[in-house]
Image 1 (cartoon, chains in turn green, yellow):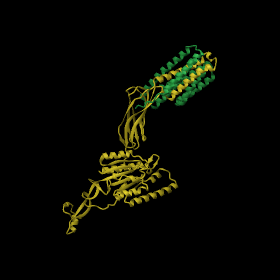
Image 2 (cartoon, chains in turn blue, yellow):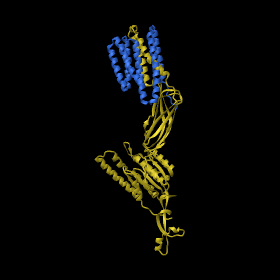
Image 3 (tube, helix red, strand yellow):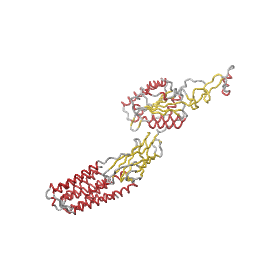
Image 4 (cartoon, chains in turn green, yellow):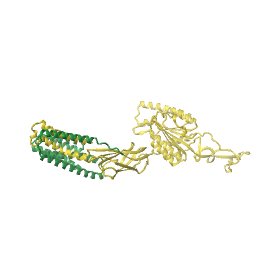
Length: 169
Length: 439
């Protein structure tokens, strides 16, 4: 199940991006998106995880470049979300096929797909809300917000990195 | 955190950085149709939420308890043994738990799995079932590792826990038929070994003049009839058990390895076969493994002693020790006086005086020497230069054996491609009966 969803997401993510770029008439980016999509599909079939991660990053980069070229942000958001799903499912499928006995696979798959679906739905909803709700912020407050965001994220990352390893057994 | 988490964080920071810096770097972009910088930040939102969900569900503690069960604890090399490891989660629920068992070196999995990815609720159990086989050895199972992650696999927690177990793989057996050895001294109990003492027995020992008290049925009437003034009695030889000490040489310098083959394994098999042979005959057998350290199976009899010896042999490994580099420190008190000692060793020239010393102390010494030269020649391609070297080494070895024989030591030169039993039997049968003590 997760394998089929992964391939579907791998196909749809560049496809949505391509559609958005086609609408905007960005042929260069369109060609790059098509190439990335093909490479990703091949990598997903052969299970090369480093290529898959690279393709995911490239899709994000293309989305960023497309955003600068006036492409619909909603479609870009959808494409990024699908790319995230495809990247996540590829790694999950790899873990599952490597170690899991069949009797445990269905349970893990159900939990994972449920959690992933909820997360992506929340991400899409938040993104769409952010696109629709527009707030005018001046330069100074924007800078303050940016600095605050960086500091918060830095603390978050530092805090997560410091999680001790459990060795109590 | 895993590398995946770092990738997500890197991408989030990259998008945020671009989203914030772009309006500043390119004046006027903020007024663009999409409000460009802002929408780039929007692209980061699914990633941020993905990271936040993973962080909220990250594993905080692993508490696992493992129990290992083997269907047999003592097997022979190559024989299958079924193993089940039951793992119980005593801590909080684990969304994804990767459990791996670490097998000791020398064992391999022939069927089943020793690792799995599963999810375990609190109090829930899972089992790893596998079939193992391996080489000779004493294997102690211990540590297992577990890696717990949330379902996205961004945050992980590692731990180790114990599932104890022990598997002994005895040496491959060789079966010998009973053979008569002749140690200088036997023990007081009836057994299969002629004791060189007159008494109750079936084998003829000697005829001597009749003495009052001799049973009438032992009078040798034929010889008595030829003599007018005297009568003669047939004396039979008592059969008793003997003390036998087996010394297995596990010094590194006496071992030769070629690929997966090891000369020492043949020595171990020979020691096991001889121990079983002598124990089956009711003798008292002890084992000394002399190498990196000394390990013992103190002299004893019966099935329990057989198990002790086989377990000691299962644990035997070659090794080096400066202190035990030569055989000088063989603890002779370990072996009862004038008992039979069997040394299994490829032998070096330095060992000759030590064996001579043992012989001089009154022990009956037999040296079984697996031939290292033929073993090496049989496992590697031989060039003409090698052939000359091999012949020189063979001559040196023959010279060493001659020196041992002159000291009264039985020597068995064992080409390991040939069966050992006929060689030992020939050495035993050729032993001269040295004197006899009449009771």
